[in-house]
Amino acid sequence: MNSIRWQTFEKFLRLLAAEAPDTEQQSFRIRCMERNLGLPVKALVIGVLFYYLFYSRWFDTPTSAREIAMEVIQRFFLVYVLINVAGAILLVGMSQLPLSFIQWVVFVVALLDGLFLAGLTLVTGGFDSMLFWVFLGLIVRNAISVPVAPLQIMLNLLVSSCYVLAGLLDLQIAQFEMDQAQIEPMTEPFVLRIVLLFLMTLCCYGVQVLVDRQRRADEEAREYALRQEQLRVTSRLAAEIAHQLKNPLGIINNAAFNLQRNVKEGKATITQQIKIIREEVERSDRIITDMMGYARLAEGKLEKLNAIEELDWAIERVFPVAAHYAVQIERNYASVLPPLLMQRNHLSEIFLNLLQNAREAINGNGTVQVQARYGENYSVVVCIGDNGPGIPSELRDKIFEPYFTTKLKGSGLGLAIVKHNVEIYGGTVKVESEPGKGARFILQLPAKSLIKLRR
Image (cartoon, rainbow, N blue to C red):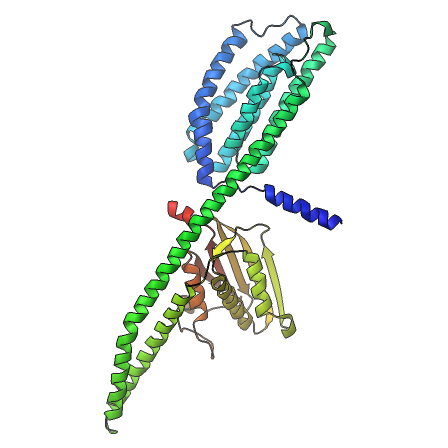
């Protein structure tokens, strides 16, 4: 029963999970909300507050406790202005600074706004203050400027807590002064206002989840169309090249065969030359046949694939339990990885070929390391290595060439297919190796091509 409840809770958390927008979108939000709109508005508000705090008697109260509170707010206001000036300078030059640093600047400034607004709420009526509605606006502004879910929820809960703290301090001051007779009744239940603040926090996050889901659906649709078009173009190009070359090669092969049949036995030189021609034609024909096979690979459908699940599936096929290989598989997977939009047979061929090469390199006895982690530009990085003899440095540039092999019974197509299947999705593959220390193949598979194209 507990297991079922925990699974239900996990499903609920996944339902509410929201992926943060890409760095370009986050930078755009901060630039528009905090710099272009926020700085002029805040400059105007600070100017008005400066006049009323220091040149007006609007905030004056007849009680000493509130006068003390007012003095504290005046002093805090000067610190508040200095911090906002520093934040404004950083926002103006945000293009020269790391986005992660700017995000924390926005977080600190927003929290400071909540604290200062709480101080003003304290001296303008506590729970009955009209500044309550400014807190609601502050929560909406934070949801736009801080789209990262944990930071956004924590910031808005802290801002809501600032309002609650200001209201409670107002009640404590009134009780301390024993001036209950002069306290006007609340115009509305303060509990309702507190609930409204927390509901606004949840609603802002809920809207972000919905917007994020729609954004991801749109991106996946565009990604699907883009990759489908890439595969279609690759398929058509391979088919056209194969069709154009296969016919003349067939004619050449027939001519060479007839010539060889009609040549007299004593002309060995001519016979040897014709034999070479036929061998090269046959080799070219194999290459074209494989190219047509590449074209057929593009006929499948794209799917959202989990890299970890596909790796585990490939490991089970290459190292079946019944075979009793003396191989230790070291798996190191990231907890969360973006899905890959690929054809399943393409990704399976990549992993199967690399794992089979690792098994053959260690001769079924050794260690194979399999790693999957989050890469740059919304990509998945997969590393497959072994502790075998390694690859000599003079051969590393040749191992991805078709028909190049160092194995007695190898076809020389395994790594060529790996390279082909990775590159048609805009990915890369490279090898690291030292003689006697094994080899390590590093794949970078983009989860989103559209972001790379925009850049």
